[in-house]
Image (cartoon, rainbow, N blue to C red):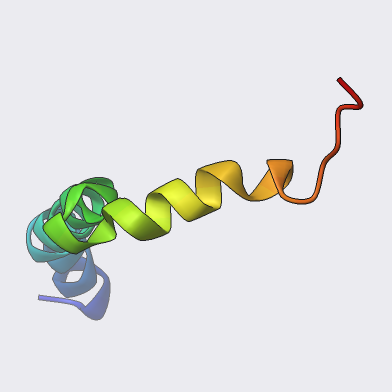
Length: 54
């Protein structure tokens, strides 16, 4: 087997699985149990210090 075929086999199998695991992990990261407070802070950060004058 040439180096090209070896790298292609790796990319077609193990690297694909690793990328899928990384993708699922990054998608699930904001939904972990301890993230609620930080997510709320990030969502309301743009409204900090605003006075509407109403």
